[in-house]
Image (tube, rainbow, N blue to C red; front, side, top):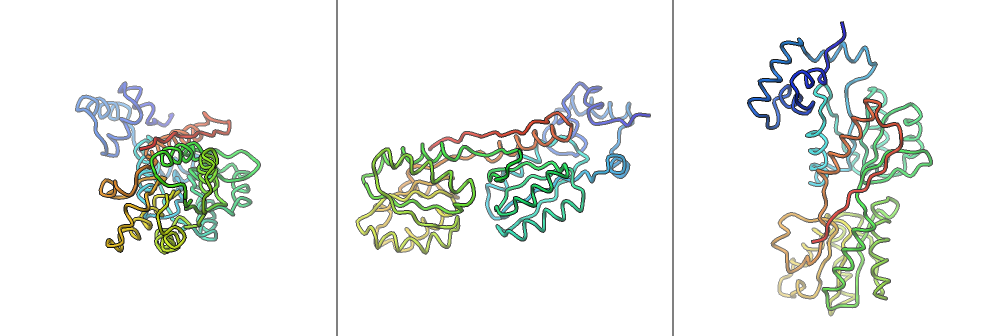
Length: 327
């Protein structure tokens, strides 16, 4: 007898597979009417999730591996929420690991995912493991690169932000609102797409204004960026504009600005930020332009693409860029 699937239940109940998943897992919001229809269909079809049998039949683990750089950034937590909320197959579980932005740690995690025969991998790479990732692709492992491109010759699916466009628009808005011609560009991770693409967008806008700028590497790190601020003050004691290409670096700069309130750095060093920070509304005087990101939407797009890959409905390599907005 053919095994009853979540799709069969959805068809019998005349609801979406996502609704069935919510009922089965007891999460999300479902109307009483739809819950009754799903429960009736489950009973009529004798549906149950037999994970062990399914795994043996498919020679897979029903596990999705997710590699993120850190658990401390809210952006990544919102991204994961988007993935989990929109993944409709209730029999799948997620293994989430942090590479801590360490090359060897990332490779170790990917190696364990391969040994565990995961069904797919969602990867926010630190870069440098391209050869190993290429091997995994040749083994038909389904990998979706998110936010940070994997620079390899063969196609790998990618979903992320349009960093060049967003940073270009951010810088244009910022330059039109500040009284300075001196600008500091605070970047990092130039070897990764998020690093060099954001630099590219900012530099394009600066060149259009025929402005010189000083580039400093904040390594996408709050502490390093906070420590850099005195160098900015020393170079531009009368003030300048600061373009921070990552919200974590912005947090460090804002801490430095407010460390010595008597010096009134707030009025002399306006900031443009790629991404928002906690309690940003408190710092309106400091952060006068910022990029609004949509990590939850990216998570949903990643989830949908991975499910298409699992179902065999997406054989072509996909690249999708999500547009941000400027506040």
